[in-house]
Structures are given as C-alpha cells and as structure tokens.
Image: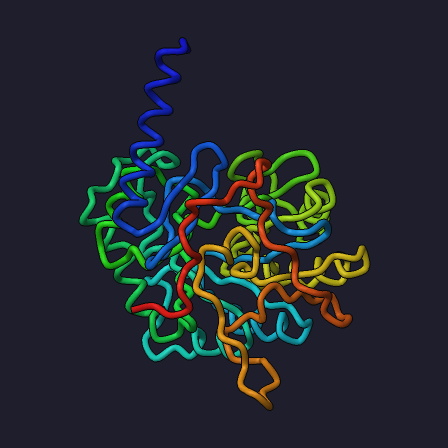
Length: 337
C-alpha cells in the first residue's frame, strides 16, 4: 500500500475518532494514543486493554452470560478474593433473575456486551455493518438491565467479537449511550494456538477439529498468561465441552487456573481498576468514616488480590515522553448527570 493510501486511512481514523470525541466530550491524541475525558465518558475506536497493569497482574473478564453457573462462579471468585468483570448479553438475562444483583454484591462489575451479540461491523461474521439506530438499540436494551446495578457511573462496554470502528463509535457517542467507556478488549484468550487458547474454542472442534479437556485448556491459558505477563483475560462463563454441562467447561477451568496462577505470584484486579481504563472513568468516592471500604460493586482504586494483603495501587498511566501535559482536559468527574 502506498504512502497516499496510508495517509488517507490515517486521516479517516483521526476524523472518526474526533467525531466520537467531540460528541462524547473526550479527546484522543494520535501522537500519544491517549484519550482523556471531560464531562462525559470516553468511547472511541481504539481498544482499551491491560498493558498499563504492573507485571504479573491480570484482570479476569467473562463474556456472553449470564449462564447456568454464573452464580457459582461469582461466589467462587469472591471466596478467592478476586473481583472480575462480567460483560453480559441482555438476551441471556432471564426474568426475575437475581444473578446480576449477586454479581454486584460479590464485588464484581457488570459491562454491556449488547443485547444479541451481533457483530456491529460484520467483520467477524461476514455480515452487514449495523446501521446507527440498530447499533444504539443493541446497547440500549442491555443498558436498561444494567443501569440499576451500575455504581459510581462506571459504565463499561465490550463489542461482540471485538468488532468496532469509528462509525460505530460515532453512532453511540451521538446517543444517550455515550456514557459508556470502551471498547474494553483483551490481551489474553483471543484464539487457539501453541501455548494459547480461547475457552469457547477449546470446548468445540471449531477452528482446529480438536476438543480439549478442562485441564488442557487451562494449561494453555496459564501458558499464555505467563508469556504475556500481564493484561486482560477473556473468558466465557456460559460455555461447556460439547454443550454438555456434565463434561465441564469454563467455570471448572477457572477453578483450576486460579490456584496455579496464585502459586506463580499473580495478582488480580477488577477490569475498571486497569489504570488506562480507570483514567477514563469517574472516580470512586472515598468510603465514609468507619466504613470497611467494601462498597458493593466498587473498587478501591487498583486493589489486587492473591490470597495475601493487597499491594498498593498501581501508578497512573505514564504521561507522554515529553512530560508536557498542558492543555490536557480535566479527568472524568466523580458523578454522572
């Protein structure tokens, strides 16, 4: 591709991100890949991942639920001192279900993974790019379920399949769904390969004709975590081997992974405590005097857990090399309108 084409593509990316930023009240700096927020949250066409985490620190995230064993998983993680992120599809929430309330009560955070898990851009499914109204509706339907459980205005969004672009960002930022921060993506668990895995593919012969055991898939996840060293881990709590709960699946694998990772010295943070993501979210108010600081659904600003006392919070994202931060917008406010 020639320099002219490269320039046109770069101009399109900058323009699309600028549209999203101007509507949502946020800015993106192409020079630093940095986004800051003033008055509204930040949703753009650039993925948010876990590179800003300290070494040997991971954030567990679970997509496509809630499933039949989400409640069990939430309870297990709480018992292990781990707070995770659950990115739900609205269609998976059954009437009168108490699982969303339990997830929050157990100290986890909920995120919006759209209503039907349809690719917004069609990239992964060879389908059409959703129009603006349908894109917004996919978020809005699940938002109606999530909003009662969102504390401190921390609205998180992850696109199905990770498919997102400037057109989708502009549509969402021109709607009431511009309160979301995202797209929240991942560093670990993307695909099958040597010393790497993605759980849903472990349980079916989808990409390689193989179906793995719970232990085999877990070993691949741990190997990838060791190789990458830090980051956001993608998992899917509803899925089981051959769609047969009796054979085990992701929940069972997590119960094998956690002890192994703790033994290797890994600590765990909640997804909204990843520094690059936390910087775009409203701050969490300090607990009242006499409180133990364990407000349901709230993080204490980067706390980590590995079965031992929590280490101090990680440092904020590193500023540009020049050190010049003049003209940078103010951080997100502590409260949402």
